[in-house]
Image (cartoon, rainbow, N blue to C red; front, side, top):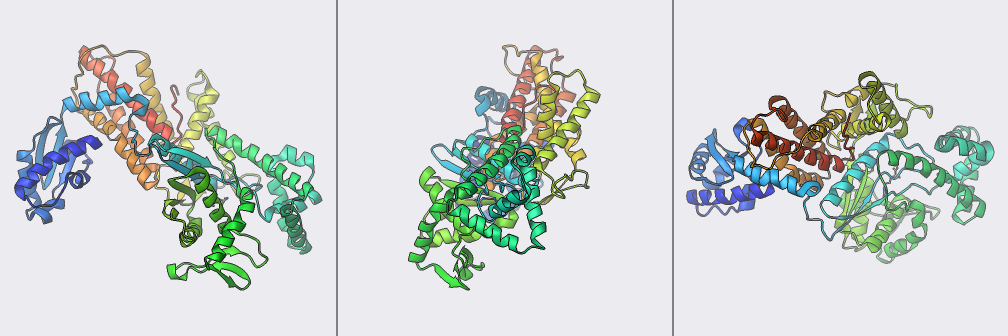
Length: 568
Ligand code: ARG
């Protein structure tokens, strides 16, 4: 459809030139003005002519009428002026020869823009803090991050997914103290991250009464930093235990990272950057700490070294960015975190610029809002945080119950429950603009009749079931209903949506698009006989349209990490 907009824009441009030869407009400006009317009865594409009235010094009504009279294109069945809008109706020939054939020929590549070819994107996402719970606050970074990776890969970028584990810092001193005092190897082997979290919580509770614990923890962390063998072994083990558990959740979501280089990896890479900051005269001493003053940019100072000379979160991020630039030669580095960290990113991005790195503008922070869950039903044994693992487990269990009740003989029940349960959570989460705070309502996410994951996966399964019963005949395509036209019109917009989603770092654009496809397909399915159509050409075309729908849904599912369920 990008092509079609361009094509029509060029035709429109000659009509516009006839009204005013010095409008100064070009085809791509006009293409950008074209809109999809909310109701297919008003055409497949429309030009809101008020956008031109100032330039052309005519009323929108006049412009629409003049353009309607002169516009001619093989792509169009007709063009009508209505209330200052020029409504254009795509011809059936364009639908069959361009849209339908294009989807079927390109298959898995349909909708893929190519602007990422030869470029590299590094995506830093999920990145939980070791020995702290992997909870619903991480749902956003994990799911948005992975979807952005898929979107960029689809556009041809080489992508590097990095899990920047929070695997360093004073919390390890605390954990080492707590483990030695109250834990045992067996406890941690049996209890995994939950046990580590418990020890960590106990440390804080005990430290309220025993101030010496904090000093002990600091001392253990210093020993760790200095390479004490025993502490290093414990640390490595705590990281491994945590990672093994995170990986179970990643496996459920089909997420693999290209790198797990966490914060600890950058310990020896920070001094060079601190030195550079000093050389450039950017460091100021403030109450003993080293900072970069950002007053000029209306931001609080960026902290580089604490009073005792130890490094901080921004210090590590700066060193990591420099390392990644050298290692991967990225064209773009994306960081997905909660909006609570927006200031942190704005600050250190600015510092990178001040240091003279000319790639500072390739750093992109993608923030998202908070997640809460309705009611206390999902609270876990670790207290009031809800673990991601438990959220998914609960969704899977509920879907299992639904299957047992409605379709107990379904083959492969467990796998399907997993695909639909996980999909429901992902789809629900990605239905809103990422920056909005969301309140999770499990019943809504799992419903089969709302705008949900189960609904769109069910629609996908429906296309599979139809296609398993038939193959199209070799005859010319014949379109005969508006349901077919509307569906093809929606299918034709896929690439445009992909581009929009990438430019806005917004997977929800794909989620909402999937709903548009599902709604259009279900209307087509309910109102048009597919396998039962009498006319052979009509039947064959409808089967091909079903195949095209399956292809587009499948390609779009991939982008938001939704499984293609052939049966539900
Ligand atoms: N570990 C951090 C947290 O859980 C997120 C890390 C984000 N990435 C980064 N490069 N700072 O809050």
